[in-house]
Amino acid sequence: MPLRSLMLALMITFIWGVNFVVIKLSVSEAPPLLVAALRFALAALPAIFFIPRPQMRWQTFLGYGLAVGVMQFGLLYLAIQLGLSAGLASLLMQMQAFFTAMLAAFLWRERLPANQIVGIALAFAGMAVIGLLADHHTSIVGLVLVLVAALGWAISNVLVKSAGKANMLSLVVWSALIPPVPLTLMTGLTSGWASIGHTLTHSSLGFWAAVAFMGYFNTVLGFGVWNWLIQQHGASRVAPLSLLVPVFGMVSSALYFQETFPPLKVLGAVLVFVGLLVHVFGGRIVERWKVQGVEA
Image 1: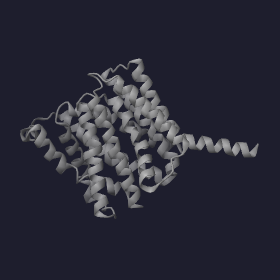
Image 2: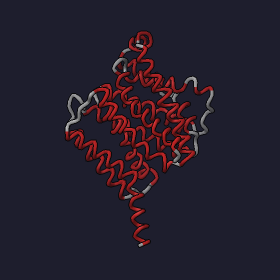
Image 3: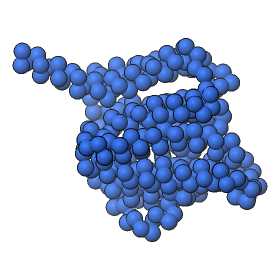
Image 4: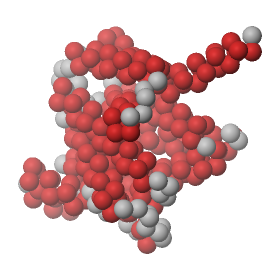
């Protein structure tokens, strides 16, 4: 991959990692579901006037918007607002890779290779360690919510695969029109309708800057550049770089919020991350060993 493309990929993974810090800052000032609604509203507008609609079945389009907007990000924002650290959230959201593999195995009878089974086992062992340490910094409710959020991400991955060759940027931008309605309704029902008006009229400039960052930089720019990189260089070269997202997320969270991690929590995080590495790279390593064995 050329240096220019590599630097673009690093920039996007950095933006996506730092985004977890931005989420935590924004949900401290406004109801989390409303923050998510505003983020998607900005992601859709004004981009829908310049980007063509995705060519896909409306059921898949609607399902994708709800899975990403309500299930993935709505619950992620809520988990962070309930006390889950931004750094840990950035790592645990990567459980989507395992959930995607398991959903594919269930829906399409795709066989799970040995490396994916080992990776899943390691990741869930790490989750168990983190869950045993649940306290006022890592609530068990927050852990459950972020896992359901990761499942929402996995469901959206399955829907994208079933949609065929859809333009991802078009899908991301146009599907962003869907989440604001249910997220705003849920905000009114859970936080009170007055909280919506108060957020819109009394929020700080920093809050709106955070929402704009999430809507434009994290969503539109992030997905636009990332999918361009995949088109130019292939998913096999670009996708593994997404493993840098939790690295940037945990480092930026530790630096900004001065988070400390007990040894057992570090062990749990390491197990999850090693599970991701085995899941992504294990198959390639085994294939290389087989080739080297044949050549020998």
